[in-house]
Length: 99
Image (tube, rainbow, N blue to C red):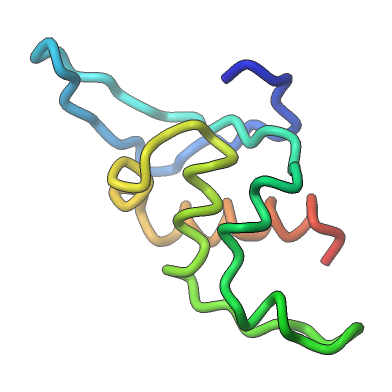
C-alpha cells in the first residue's frame, strides 16, 4: 500500500491466499489506509442518501468493497475474512468516518 496506514488491524483468524506463483500468503494484519473521496464510491446508497445525524443501517456484506479499497486487497480476498474480524474492521472504518 503506497499511502501511510492509519490503522493496523490484527486478524484473530488469519487468512491464507494462494498466489499466482503457487505460493501461499498468510494475511494476519490488515492496514487500513487513509479514507479518501474515491472510497466513498464503495458506500451503499443507504449511507449516501441518509439524513444528516441519522445513523445509517449498513449490512455487513456492503462494507466488503470499501475494505478492499482501503486495504489494497481484492474483494475476493476480503471475502475470506472471518466475520468476527470483519466486524472489527467495520468498527475501525466507522471511527475513521467519524461515526
